[in-house]
Length: 328
Image (tube, rainbow, N blue to C red; front, side, top):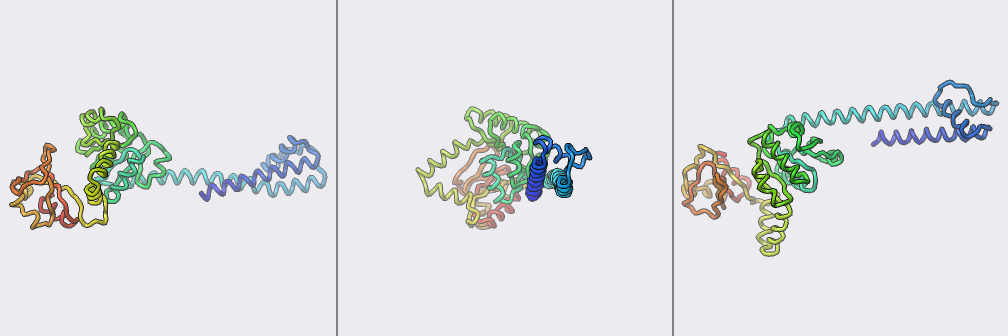
């Protein structure tokens, strides 16, 4: 901004010099056009002859105009060149730094679309210490993004590659249109078959299409918002508790999910045999099998298998202990 202020000041000074010079020559008997022309040739030092003969007063005025005008012109030109060159260099260096930052990221989350939904997602992920890379085609929105950003079309392979999709762990397709999110999902799945993809959808009729082309989860913000509002109407305390457990970072207890990998010590045991509560302090609320089916409020005799996901509540230390116990 200091460069632009300097450039603005230099241009104002140059305009003032030209104006004063034109008025001065008009007072010396020049026509308005001749006065303007004489001023321009004088401050530009092009060396043309005078339009009208100059007396002593005219020569003194022209000498002063040369001293002031030439200096002002050179200053304005130097500031203009400096602003253009430094602006381009800063932009180039900024892009290179951004590229190096993204190249060094691993297991990050790519958010396609820096709108209200994208901003909310990034803030939540940032609070959980997950690295974020944003993709947006709008230069103004990209410039306002505080996270590493790739300015480009998220439906293009080259843009997703620049965002480090091969090293990412998840991608959120949150651009405005369902068609764009569909293309983002298709390309992302092709570029990284192991990527976890969450896609935003506006129309319920498009949910199945997004799942068929590779989205692991499809979210309709309007439907979720309506469900949350209804939950606050019907069960305000329950809804508030779930919100606090899920989003309040200062709360001691939180919900977590723990994968049970192949070869886990828990594989083949029951909840009773695993003694999870005694060993970790965490409480298992539900299990999800490899088919996506939930077993809520599981009995002590419920068997744990590789591929299950344990949904538990506890402190961060307790959930971390459960992860260690499961071999996750």
